[in-house]
Length: 348
Ligand code: F6P
Image (cartoon, rainbow, N blue to C red; front, side, top):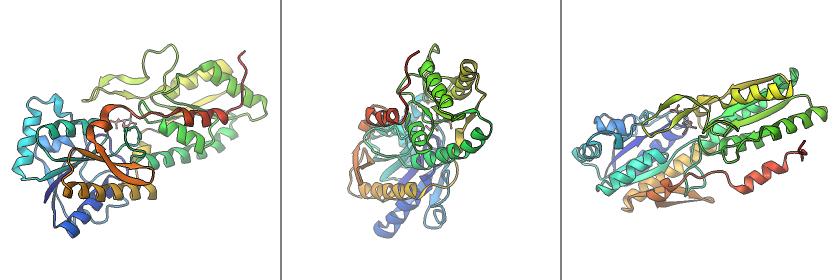
């Protein structure tokens, strides 16, 4: 078969591992030919490609980023965009297209499937917020980086008797914050699923100071909601092609508020794209490789319009539509774990 591949949306560690696994299984076990579209859907629209074979995909397993590059190109926003995509894909005589991406990228796969393109999706995002799968590759690496940052910040924060606020990514889902917060032993963890209660944050910090521990780490998700602020804290009001603002700044805003209300010296750090960079963890390499092999198997089973997913410890697949239907957010079970780790602090 002739199979196209692309990576769309924010990059994440593990994309190259998917590409490598799919190409190996496809070439060695099915005699497939591959073609890579550059920069996500932009490469399909502009017909910009690179050859994907055993040579070009060699030595990329442990590399972050994506050899296919990425972009947040939204075909829906391009006049005649879908027709152009279909024509380009046809001109390459493709039997199938494997798109790696989150909900935005897969929403284009859904539209192309309706127009007769044989699409298979692979769930990718450090935010871990795609429904229908228990895990997206890239998340484990992002959380590992964030947890290490929290670990490192402990010593300097303690040395200076400060409060250190750590802003992490995740958009509308608090998976990175709650996982790095719990794994890193943060004193306060704030996620988009629960509106921030500044009084409660202040009570928790004061209780910690009173217990003799005169430093604290606060992990806050970029998408968490500050009281008295409409919506989320963003850098300007520019939207990307899928209508998302650039979330950033809640950490600094929160740290100023904490310092004002407690008198404790407070600093903030925004981990930003550090969380998306560098080599994938062994877990992400493994998950990405399993997804890559599963995607090729789906193609050869003729099961199109589907997304490979992880359910428990098993790889399976679901309709693409189900994955983009709603954002998977942090559940009550994990929030309860978080509450269990915090001391009960009385309302003043
Ligand atoms: O969706 C992944 C993600 O890293 C989000 O956590 C973050 O809000 C966004 O992408 C940042 O996007 P960009 O790289 O376009 O600034």
